[in-house]
Each structure stands twice: as C-alpha cells, then as structure tokens.
Length: 201
Image (cartoon, rainbow, N blue to C red; front, side):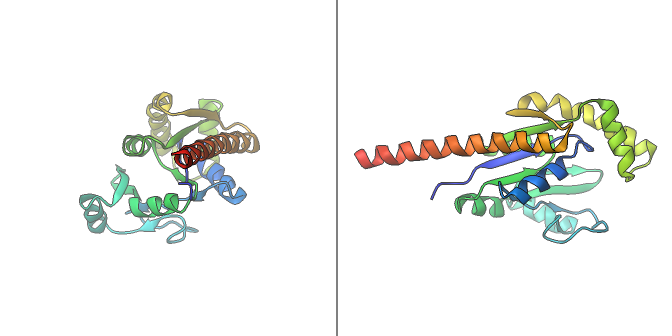
C-alpha cells in the first residue's frame, strides 16, 4: 500500500482556511488530523472533531514524551498535533491535512520534509479586516492584534510550497484540490516506478 501524502494548510485568521479545509474534506480529497488544545471548548465545537481538549499538565506530558508532531503556545493556550494519529493515517494510505499556524507548519516540515505546505492569503488586508469584523468573534482591539499577527504570518508564506489567494471560495478550493491531486498522482507514479525497479532485480 502506498503511503498517504501529508498536506499542511496555513493562513492568517480570517482567510477562510477552516472553511477551505472543510470543503476539501467533504469532497473526500483528504482526511483531517484533529489537533489538541488546552483552550476551552467554544459553542458548537465537538470533542474529537474540532479539537481534542485537554489540560495543560497532560499537554506538557505529551510534549515531553515526544508525542506531538508540532505544538505552539498562543495567547496562553497550547495547540498541537498528536503524532501517532497522523502517522497511522499516512501508513494506511490516507492523504492527511493539517490546518495549523506557520510556526507549527514549519516544525512539521522540519520533521517530515515530504509534507506539502499550502499558504492561503486574502485578496487584500482590507478584505481580511472585513472578514474578521463580519464573523463577530473579536472586539476592535483583538481584530487589530489579529491583523498585526497576519503580517508576520504572511512573511512566512515564501517558505511554503504553494501560495493561494482565497477570493472566491469555490475557486480557492478547486485550486488547492488540483494541487493535491497533482502531488498524489506524482507520488503514485514514483511508487509505481520503484515497484517496477524492485521486480527487475
């Protein structure tokens, strides 16, 4: 069985990366790796679907034990990707998607160079600000903090394999889906060539 491909999607808060990932998963292109966090569960979120919710002590045990593929601390809360679940899905031939911040994405790339990093950007800063305002989660001060953080995040985009603009959602999803299909197709061709070479020995 061919090993699955690992895709990492990042982008500033408000770019719609969560919606993009949901669309990709609904299409059956990839399977989502659920992250762990120490932050409180929000209304409408589900354990094991949105996040695995845990406390700080347990999360730090997982870090110390090498159980996290990547992790970071944002606003006093830990976020991270449990390594075992990702490795299991990849070994089963499933294509996996991680929706994580640049700090975590680059940590994953360092540990798993075969990971394909995709960065989503907004059409403009003004559009990004409007999206943050429209979703109504943060006050004015928090929105400005999000925008300030977005500048650093977008500076990391050049370290990614692909940069894609999310202007029209359907177009963005199609573009990323095509990227993923191309990567998987190329990997399958390589696996086929390797199998052929082994049979010739």
